[in-house]
Image (cartoon, rainbow, N blue to C red; front, side, top):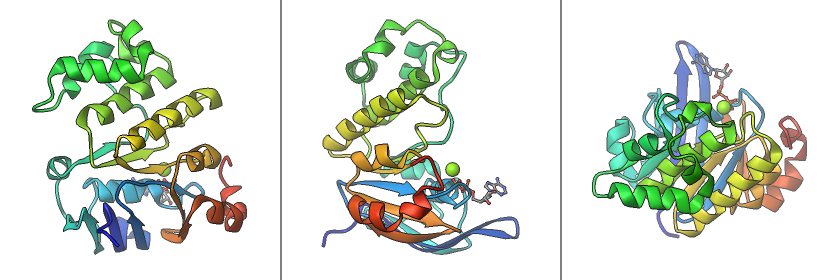
Amino acid sequence: MSVPILEVVDVHAAYGRIEVLRGVDLRVPRGSVMALLGPNGGGKSTLLKVISGQMEVTSGDVHLGGVNVSGAKPAELARLGLCTIPEGRSVFPNLTVEENLLLMSYAGVPAEQVLETAFGYFPRLEQRRDQLAGTMSGGEQQMLAMSRALASDPALLLLDELSMGLAPLIVEELYETVGQIAQSGVSILCIEQFAKTALAVSDYAAVMVGGRVIASGEPDEINESMADVMLGGAA
Ligand SMILES: Nc1ncnc2c1ncn2[C@@H]1O[C@H](COP(=O)(O)OP(=O)(O)O)[C@@H](O)[C@H]1O
Ligand SMILES: [Mg+2]
């Protein structure tokens, strides 16, 4: 088996004295999409903070493409090809769509190319290029946030609840784009409450409860064996 793009080994992490990650093990094979499911409070967002270098572990290791990145800073992780879209809308509300996109232009990626890629995936953003990002709908803001992932052409993309507060139709649309990003060769780990929508574009799924991954496998297996747990969220 080839080296996984992401491997989390027995990771523990705490907020103060309260341990929230209690021995997390997770492997995301290179080139695959994995949905990370489970009820609220299970530790999914905390795990994403650990992987993206925003929170320290108390023990355990994180490997990115075979490199031990435990303790690495976010900038270092970005250089290794990690891109994170955290919970909430990560756009600058007082800048226009175009200004937001230009800020996303990466070293070596010409601004024109960033705009072309974003507008290619989301024509709606082109129509609104001069509008302040904060005045767009939640779905449009999330499209703008996702354009950052497209611009950086990452090796691994981490997505935390793209669907938060959005109408189901918009969520479907966003996940179609997630599928397209995956087809371009990007590995993706997506946290999602809309289990069905996420599973539709996923190769694998894992379920997190109480600070541990309690099951992982192909979407069908997870769907069958974990129906009870997933009904805890908006299945
Ligand atoms: N900043 C924080 N300080 C203290 N406790 C937190 C903080 N963020 C999350 N928690 C707690 O950690 C646990 C896991 O939360 P979280 O990782 O957000 O779960 P999920 O994303 O699966 O809903 C919850 O009990 C939550 O209350
Ligand atoms: Mg969360």
